[in-house]
Image (cartoon, rainbow, N blue to C red; front, top):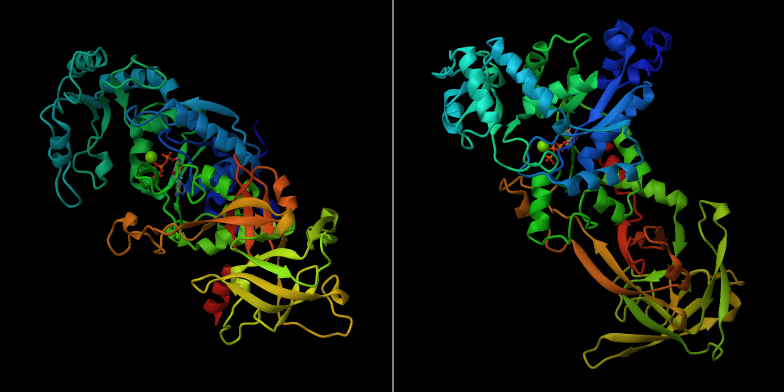
Amino acid sequence: MSPEPVDPAADDTATPSLDFVRQKVVDDNAAGTFGGRVQTRFPPEPNGFLHLGHVKSIFLNFGIAEEFGGTCFLRFDDTNPETEDISFVAAIQEDLAWLGVQPDEVRFASDYFDQLYTWAEDLIRAGKAYVDDTDAETISEQRGGFGQPGVESGCRNRPAEESLGLFRQMRDGVFADGELSLRAKIDMQADNMWLRDPVLYRIRRVPHHRTEDAWVIYPTYDWAHGQSDAIEGVTHSICTLEFSDHRALYDWCLDQLDLPFDQPQQTEFARLNVTHLVMSKRILKTLVDQGHVDGWDDARMPTVRGMRRRGFPASALRAFTDHISVAKTNSTIEIELLESFIRTHHNARALRRMAVLDPLKLTITNWPEGHVEWMDVVNNPEDPEAGTRSVPFTGELWIEQDDFRLDPPPKYFRLTPGREVRLRNAFFVTATEAITDDDGNVIEVLATYDPETLGGNAPDGRKVKSTMHWVSRPHAADATVHRYERLFTAAVPGTSTGEPLDDLNPESRSTTAAKVEPALAEVAPGEVVQFERLGYFAADLDDPATFHRTVGLRDEWANIQKRKSS
Ligand code: ATP
Ligand code: MG
């Protein structure tokens, strides 16, 4: 689909707010580059699960295609058979579907192995590539360094015919792994190290998850990536900053193709980093392999699967990545900002429920024996359409252990012997006595209630200083609740020792056996509810009687902003 080129002058109020990547698209369209076409791609390597960093790249690439009437392919960059697997191909597609993006086409770099090989032969014939028998370690030494001269390989001037013969023998399996490689003949003294005769093909006897045993030579990233972009007709090849140095090589490789249309152009943006998280498949894999988390889909993981289990909705992730926009320099976003997007989303939608996470018995001694009072309670004060539900109240309740103190510290306004408090949506109660076990731990609190305070207000206008949530013991459902702290204690894991795992929080998860109101027994897998006073919790995707704390109620991001501005 070719949209009309966008004229930036036509909407000069909107243009200045565009990020630099979108601005480039607007400029290219105005200049007629690519004939006004916009085509992007998201190119994951199928060697792990997608994480929040990928999410940013996904919404950027698919977002641009959407906004400019273009197309976006999902391309698996599958040129390293050692670490790649078909299971990741499926998982990545599932995650994309969950994120709500629909690739115009799904492609594989391995689809292009024949074409890439043919182009490599052309390059050899043109005297721009040669087969080298130098080993990988020596190649790397001879590359030199910045301000250090490179050393030309003795094979650099091998006649094209000879290189061609050797290259075919490489393909046919005549040589051992690592014995020979194909290198581009560019400039061993270039300031840019990537132009010092980079390797384009290496021998690897590793079966590929798609081409199986068809190949024993595989193209490197640099030979595969730009050429794949060209094959697909990509216009804007958007990647992260670590590829900036590769751009000259990307362009060089494409220059060799003599394309009948404008060459794809690479644009780099800063990787997304978020405090207290790591965004590297390698480290995430270590967390899984060493058993620090339950798996790639553990609710503490910043993977798409982990965030999904945790109750981070795709639309809130998109709002977050759109908000932080794209930058040209690396920086780290505070996790509290991410959480505020999640909280805002759920505040508008989540049903309010009562759950007691650390249960303590509260028994009302003047309650009519066996009586059940059904309270009509609002489901979500932010959303009148969410209606109400019936919550049973009896003389036998669960309250939070934290809501009672035998010896209250100063400014403790919750329940203590002799004090009156409000039970939310129900009655005022006054604690009369605490029953303790042999160790002095409070195991039950006795109280009386005032029947005149039904609904939570005293007709005589008397006030109480706290309101507590509760669950009726005979009606309570059991639930397992996981509460989470930061997965890494340091804002930037690895700052002090260089090893992110040193900052792993050993207490990132605590699990309790909770008592919850009956309505919580009917929550759908994955649904997020607000436990009143406690936070937002997501029902587990496999077992909805297990809940994961999504985020707390307090907007810590707002507090951080206040602190910064004062
Ligand atoms: P990792 O370092 O976690 O292995 P990667 O960059 O190797 O990540 P790929 O599968 O090669 O992962 O990346 C697919 C796309 O996602 C690339 O275009 C890459 O630039 C982008 N991407 C990966 N991590 C981030 C991030 N933290 N922020 C933005 N984009 C990212
Ligand atoms: Mg990678």
